[in-house]
Image (cartoon, rainbow, N blue to C red; front, side):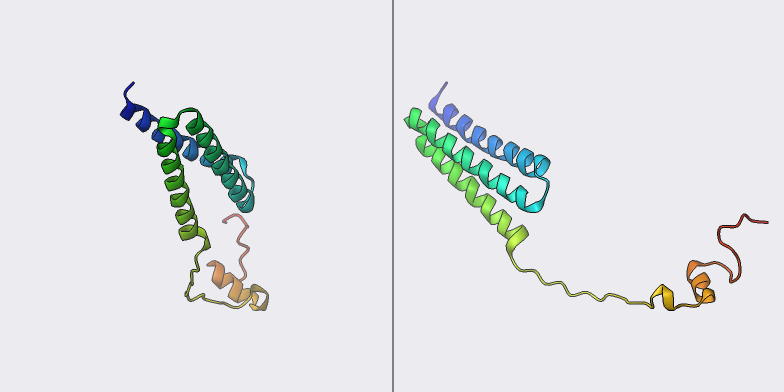
Length: 125
């Protein structure tokens, strides 16, 4: 296996491990929003630690693994900030009607599209 192939394989392995683990731990296992974030952070830390250990055993891949994990974590942080944390303002008009309890029986029947005085659940004649 050539040197370039080993580096490319290391990059792909780290990215696939991060993506698959984030999908599984944050999307499948986590029951809520905060636990999803916590499990995602723990998974990223675990992948970074494992990549560091592999880089310690294979010094030729150390820079590649460190650069890949750093870039992936920066992209993940930017994506999390962009989709979850930054401020958003919503300006929309919400139509408010009268509460059903304040409408008369005729008005309720008209809202429902039924003739007044007719039971909507009664079978047709």
